[in-house]
Length: 334
Ligand code: ADP
Image (cartoon, rainbow, N blue to C red; front, side, top):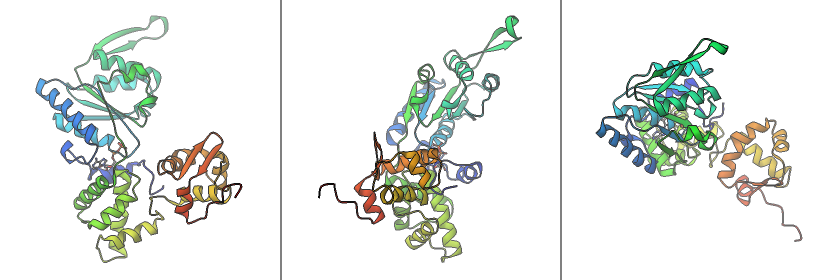
């Protein structure tokens, strides 16, 4: 697993649980979404009814699950958790829905990956608080409507555009989470370091923030590696020296690029003279699947202005040459 991957496995999720903010107040950054959600929640609390369904969109590791937990907390209710891929059949979803208690929050992660029949069942449930339980098979099958107590769905998706319109329209509120600014990530790691009982000094916090790809999950992960380094090879101080040394061990560079990102850029510059070159050709030269390069390395390289996409293929930008310490080729005709 890459240290700078934005996704998390179960072990990491367990390590993260201790670091999750529990109230909107403690949730760092995302001011717009936080303000809007705060209004939605307070209005619902004032009326004594569950709020509208909430859709949270944005890249992995930015706080969608955390916000779902906070929503349930702030409403003083419990959270039920499932995900698009975990629901194999519409019947699985019907079972979850029919066991919900009044006012509960149902969190559906990766909601864009729900199978079609489950999706259809869900939007009826969201709109009319009803599931149709199908009994019997074939021509003799009939649907028995079962009414549900009011509840709130919080859906999370990496791309709201992937949701079919009828489902998207059932959400009364959509919040889009964006990458975090460096000062926000500084607050995230400083807060986390306190919770871990290993306070970080300000320079170290700044260093981690600038290498975390705008993503709190990555910032917290790098923080844990710095803590390891400080404990095993350092004198326990969580300072700039420990931060730099730990990130060097894990080959995370000053921009937060790891070995794969750098291999892609280096190949683009040195083998293809800066491009343009097709992504699959580029992937072969670094010994990776095209999909890995496309979903893991490219988005960040493009966002950081190191790689450009053109109709004829990927190109290295002047910033890429500079970052690698290489001389760009002279423009043609000079
Ligand atoms: P997502 O569901 O979008 O993949 P998570 O909610 O699981 O992301 O967040 C990943 C980690 O980052 C968690 O440990 C969480 O505590 C931390 N985190 C995310 N957003 C924030 C934030 N705004 N403030 C503090 N910590 C955050």
